[in-house]
Image 1 (cartoon, rainbow, N blue to C red):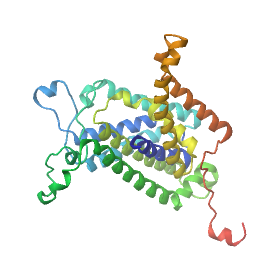
Image 2 (cartoon, rainbow, N blue to C red; image 1 turned 90 degrees about the vertical axis):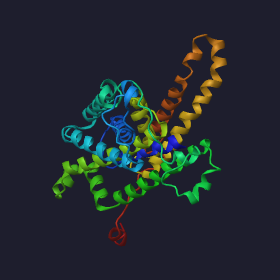
Image 3 (cartoon, rainbow, N blue to C red; image 1 turned 135 degrees about the vertical axis):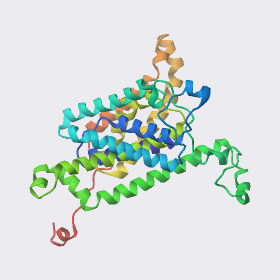
Image 4 (tube, one colour; image 1 turned 180 degrees about the vertical axis):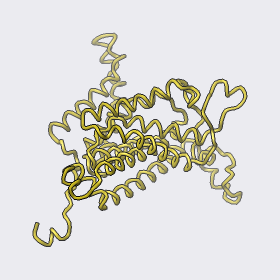
Length: 339
């Protein structure tokens, strides 16, 4: 459920870009990576002495968890703004190719530039918020009079605690985006998506609106990256491959319903459930596959991609609008006139 919630936040960010504005962004993994590494660099302790020979980072500020998450969103938004100015002049397939290229450039930078975030080696030691409560250690911010509260907590309970943190961020982002997209700004985005020429004729700055939506979506993706980094404790470039960081998110949004925030969350939970469940299915099928051919058990994990691909094909053929289609809202004065 923690990973499903993280993917739900990514799906909400993509929904802001594609569902409401029509940006064909295939570079989700890039902003996901920027958020993860930014929060890690802001919160880790810079290695010293012998450790510095094996772990190289640009800086380690030891800032609080919330500061790291905020920095992740800001830096991802700044990167998106720099990317949006030249890229958003393109349309559809050219835009998709350009955003894929941007995501791969970001991933390869983190892979090859060791001075930045330890390069091809994992960046370890990312702190987790409130972890001291579950390891029977003294927390500096916890009063001595309340120290007895941590006694019944064990390390296995931390997963549920972090799930509540991620769920709180998911709920907050959902409420903010839902209210924002129901505002005049959200109606402007849909106008730009559906009738760009008409929106421009009515005095809307189409280019600026597109940049705004792209940046807002990237900020949400950066926050998801920060939460992921603090959940996994160690990250490297391989965590942000396009298959996992981009196309899986697109499947979630398409299944749930683009243009609908509740659909984005529902699609993330369902697709991640399929993805996680098929891992057990692949392991269970290995003995059967071995009877067919000795090489097949090593390829059992591809069954996961096969089932997800079939799910995507079924959505496109039978439910292209998704499980929860976009709600068409009618203003009050139109209802009064019988429209």
